[in-house]
Image (cartoon, rainbow, N blue to C red; front, side, top):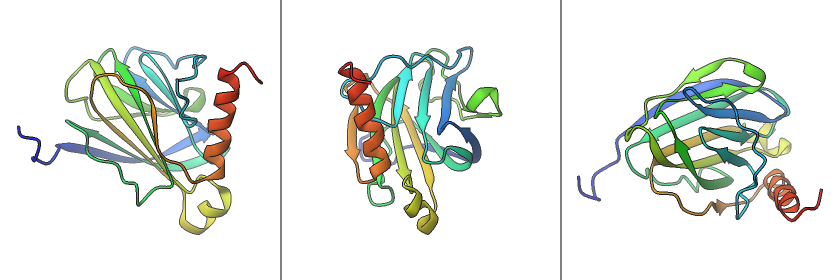
Length: 178
């Protein structure tokens, strides 16, 4: 395949019940991680452990709209459609993932990862994380997954005050300030 070809993307949309502003990406055969380590540099709204990722959402509880796109290469960020966008590396032991609700709630199977087990990149987009914006435009969460060697976490776009809260609280924990 040449670089000019369009990525092959499989998309799944779902409503996910969240609690404590959390949902999880979990690899088959893995448990939700402890998420004790803060990524360096911190990206605030997502943390990873081998086989799982913690995804922070705006609402404390209730249903949220998630779209997950599994691609064979970088599908490109949607910087115009979302207020906060971050990327982080992720290691998949099985190549089979699901989005899991907090506290062992429903599990939403995702399309198989195109390269099987191995390193991937997660790009997490959020729109409407701040409550007043969510009322006006609706909140939405968009996660892209594609094969890529590990590299540093990156904040691609940051506009909401909720994102800044999570980013600053992670940075404080990393520096040993609670």
